Length: 132
Image (cartoon, rainbow, N blue to C red):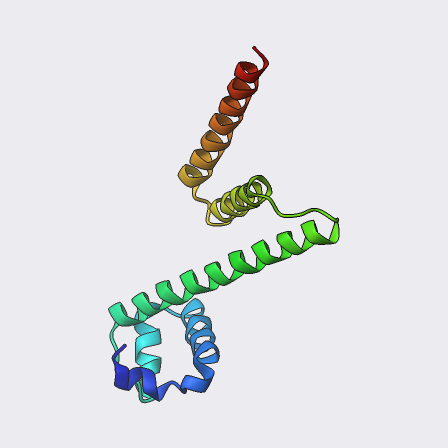
């Protein structure tokens, strides 16, 4: 969307406007959404709407992940634990794996599991070396 087109969507209600467009697009084709926006006074293209929806969905995903991280850290603190690099790493890995599963991204999920397995192997080897 151009700056002029974006200004037609109230800057105060950008999230509401984005949800509005996303909801409309979920019920119609991209071409129908572009036509609907045109009828509402916003001249745009299918490519611009598609890019906007990708950006908006990504932003929503980041917000969900951030909230999940904040909640997990608060849970640690409520339990009397101090967040450590290890606990934050575990939380991050859990959030990443959950996100991969939510998006049905088998490759990302598999890679996250491989990394966790490799880290466990390295930790075990490190412990064995310090015991010898």
